[in-house]
Image (cartoon, rainbow, N blue to C red; front, side, top):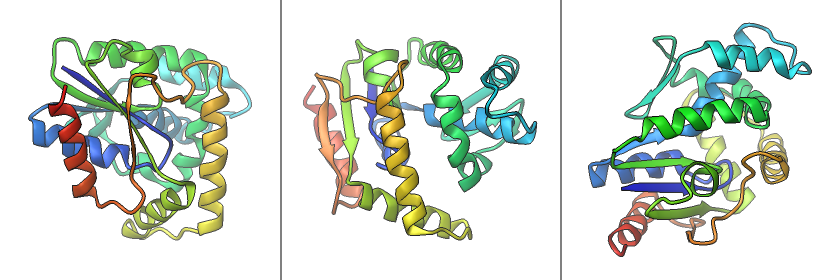
Length: 214
């Protein structure tokens, strides 16, 4: 069974998907981490962000493995590194690149072959797994998502500015919805869950209820 969880940046998809997968005994695929990994490598290799082909070349050569909530690039665990503010700011260059998205989609489809899995991202229920048995669209207001991002940065000891993060989230939403390949959109057959004011436990319980109703 494939369960897709789509939604905008900062909606809590990764945290909730990981918890849902654990509760159901399913595997978990963090597709957003794949794009972040490409951006991380781009930063490390000091690519020219205005030359998209440079980042495509990196994506074609690198080996990304995402399993059990951990992200590995060429054997290195980069799970924490891909969540930095700098990587977050550059991830759009990977996510908005059609050639890189094509590479990531192939990897994602291959990763879930004959598995029970919870997979999350922006286009899982629309582009990557349009025939998934259960689709969920997880969202929250931009302000709510900004507060959550602030907490993530603070927990890692990073300084963060509310207005700057809100600006980044609004920009990311606009870019994700406007891109030509794999745009953020709500699957017509998805269950919509707005998480403002809900705890993680409450959200996970709601999703378990949805899955069990299928």
